[in-house]
Length: 138
Image (cartoon, rainbow, N blue to C red; front, top):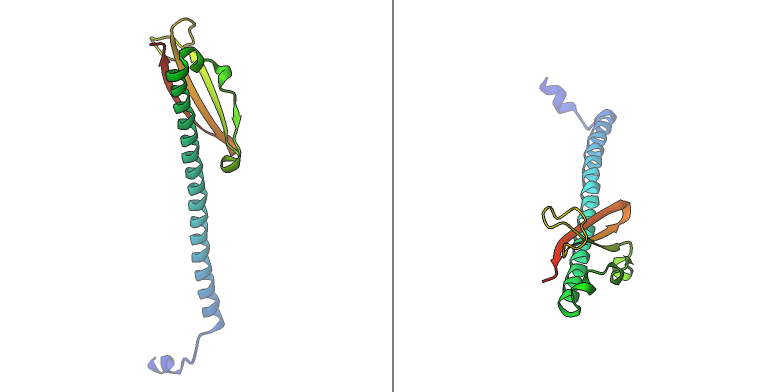
């Protein structure tokens, strides 16, 4: 049996083909995993950008309430839907203002003096981020 190992001068075609198949399979699995990570990373980045855009709009509305008054800040016509461009191409920002019932904060009710402000930022594939707050006439 030792004689067989000593006479072995190289590898056969079958051995080299098997090694190539094993290495190729491992590389394909690694590339597939990498692709999934890249896609998830892009989605997280867009979600983060959308959150910042929504917060920016919300801060603007709260500043409007402070400096221009409650009636201005709760008037939806002052905040039209925006289709963003430049660095934020593909993002859309919408402001929804609803006067709500003070007991459950979701049921629309006129005259309650409490407004729910929703900022909805959407981007490709119908992904969206919504940030909400309540504003009262105090």
